[in-house]
Length: 452
Image (cartoon, rainbow, N blue to C red; front, top):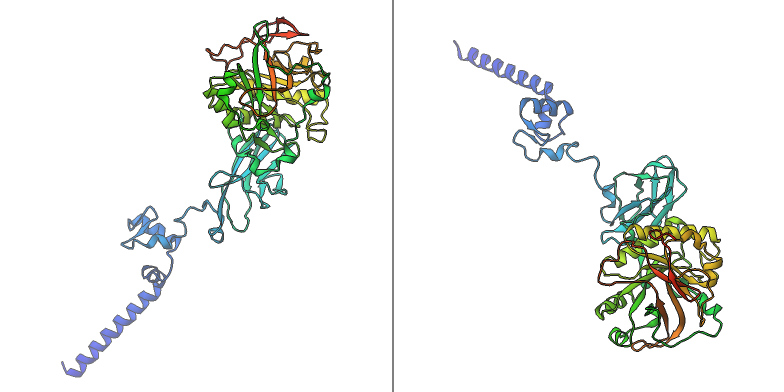
């Protein structure tokens, strides 16, 4: 064969090879692009790769260990934050709770503190959007029907907002049980204006007849001598108090703000309860209420339980029911409303296993509360007279606010207790059978467990 024929034949073979190769490449161009990383693999290609064993668990294609970065299905669609644009912001989350016919959504930061100063908003599916208009970090919705509700938080500039949808059940009837997340609502006086919030007014001082005894005398009939204190009594030398004959102390643990309704810890509560216990003085606590409904009463009781659960509390938990100077948010409640709200507090405290009762002046307990409806709870009477005129049973008597005790630089409330408190046993259960007095005479006080 001549050289020209050989060259022509080779040329035709090469040309045919090139043409066949070009046809194959054109036919499989998308696959070639995917293999070279020029294009994301198609759904069909991924499926075929898995079936052929080239790709396993949607994470690897062949030997390309970075192939998962090109797979738009690799990352979970339900990512925790709403969008990449918010990643530079502060992390916030929702804490959602319900007592009865309501929803409370608290916006907290990574340290578990309420985030104030922002108009956060949520969407409740089926109801619409709700905004934190007062920017206190809490969105509260009431008057809901019983049922399940789903809630999610709307995006807000500067914050990483959770993308999760939360479902919560709203109940028809209130449950008198301690709220686990109450600590998120508890504030200190550094967070509020105490001059506007702590405006409790002693009704007994207004009703005093001038015959009260201000000395700390030894009582008869087995009654015990005690005091009640709060931040107003300043720093207390509890060892000196013990040496002066004090046998018990009722300590204010907190109050609800009479203006804003905030739950506020008494700034001297911790030092007072720990100081009294260290001095071997049995303690109880009281809380000044400004609740305007049962839900708020459950909140108040929950706060008290949160504050006392670490301590040995022998005396009852008392609800301080008094005026907040006439302008308090709860001052205008009628007796029926107030009694219903008070019972919610007392029932919640009792459900946690503590003795409980109500404090008030003689006129307040007679006119502003239905004490018949609160039968079975302890009564702490405040009446500044030589002989009380209150015509029902009481278990403790605050007989003056002008007492003097060693270790306390201010005037202090003095009390007599007629309850049989045995500090050697557990008083966290409702035992009944407490004794008290009526019109100054000792008597057996009927209780739920000790019927008349």
